Image (tube, rainbow, N blue to C red):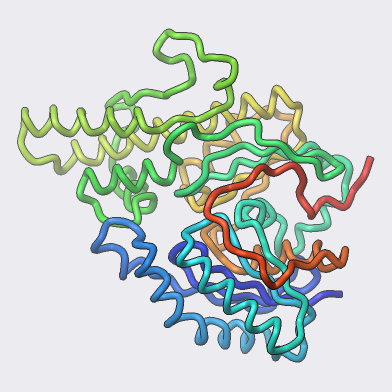
Length: 361
């Protein structure tokens, strides 16, 4: 058995959670900074770090209280040490180190990207990782910082088979919301605005899908690109404003719906293509953009019948500490701890193995 405290501060959520045996979330707490960053139209790293400092103690105390435990009951402390915003990461990292030292607990650094994938197996789902029929797994990690496809086999070997060559899908949604003067964060507000619109009213490009009539280069077959969609939206807005003035009403709703449709369409097409090519048995949808209702509805329809879809609960799609404490269980079980002099890292490193695969062929 393990009882692990997870801490998350990679971007603009301060979170803590206590997780039992890698799956059962006993108590968690998340403090959002959306209101603080809304005025800037995006996350300001230095401001995020200051907000983490303010929220850290009450969030930590709430998670422990909700779990009904104290530091003395814990077996280890885990924290996201990357990828993410460096000023924000350092707050959580140093907090976790202090707890580890002060309470003589093993310390475990967690890769945020892999934790998002594991989030789909929380609350009892970890049992499926023991089953042969679960593999291979294809994870679509889609957020403001990442849009990638990771293939995982039954021995825990992993490789990135597709990634964005420019902007992530979440970033494209945030930038679109800013261009349309809808507010922040972009994903939820674009979705809400799109609910009143026609997704087929306007056509936005689907980069790297061959839609332009030009064959996609082999190395980009499973890659993503969203910068061109943003550019197309910019020109679309200019044309409409020159013709009719302010972009509002049904035209605005149709624009948001059509733009969202382009992004969801590409995500579904590429994931389905990869699922077929690698004959995967499980597809995992995770990351902040996985909260999008249209994507959650459309992806199952696009996948081959041989692939089962695992959707992370919405509360585990956005940044949270439950996924951190859950993933840490597998390092704890193997006695693989992190040196206390470890540093934070901003960019996603090469991933060749994941720790949560217990089944071996």
